[in-house]
Image (cartoon, rainbow, N blue to C red):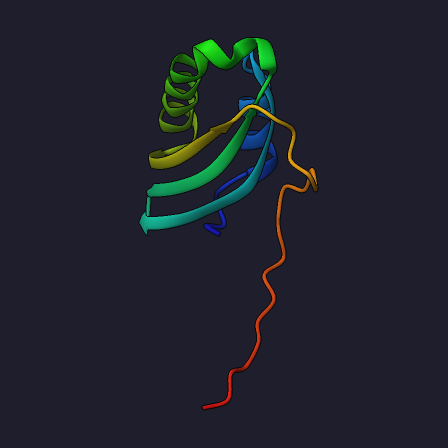
Length: 97
């Protein structure tokens, strides 16, 4: 993750938007020194399902303006995540050939 990124602030900004319940499976990386990319799953409140396009647009605007994140892949979900974890550990296994 780029060292100048404040992940707590990004999560706070996204969760502060009306209709957003949570965020998980979050990944951020640099494209160049001041342009970043992000992918995440956005957990929408049930009553906000019909506005998911509008909410994702607002998230993208805030990410670009406040965090220099211009390339995103955001997946809107309508149910709470099973684990409710922001980060998911990925197990590395060696494969024999």
